[in-house]
Image (cartoon, rainbow, N blue to C red):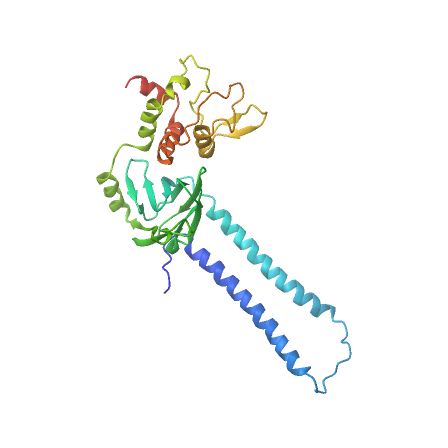
Length: 310
């Protein structure tokens, strides 16, 4: 069965694989051809000349350097493709994925939720922010030629652009327990207009709004509000900033930093603050952490002003 090439990188991955396969086949055929010829020509009892051959520097350099250059070319090609696969476009739409035994839980920024399904528009880059609730999983869509491990207690990302409307298989490619083989789903690629209607029909409370409610419910605002009596870091416009740490180092306030600040607050202590924040590990799930991170990414002066008027 030939898999469809349903993403913008599928053809590139196939071309690289076919080139590597052809090169390896050429080398194997060449090596075994020479070996068989020599075995026949110099077998016991033949009158073949067995005196030591003269040195042929040109031949030796050719059979050494030509394969080296070819394989280094394949290596450079693969590195270029790997960088492309790991660098999502700036306009990629975020979608959040939580893997758990044995299902894929998906949430769109607009509040649309799915289990074992992922609806995406054709032609729009999609950036998946993924984490695991329990063990290591692996998000694999064969028709898109993309696969990424999903790990507990950290975020990994994967991006793709669907190029053909249709329904495609989604698998977990990492053995994750007794029902691993049942951890599958589907990716539904839709025309832009159909996708917009699907979003509208399944709209819910936005992820950032859920995070804002959790922020208050969990008592975070009692410490991180600028008017609070507790000396806690200011979270306004935190996302994307460089944060000085108590040990003299610095950290970029990205998704992983915010995730660890919630679940492992003593891992990286902000400079000038005491390690008094309690850990929320075991108290909230990864879906709640995703919502809090989504809220913190949008939190700023305007957000706070909006909150005061609610």
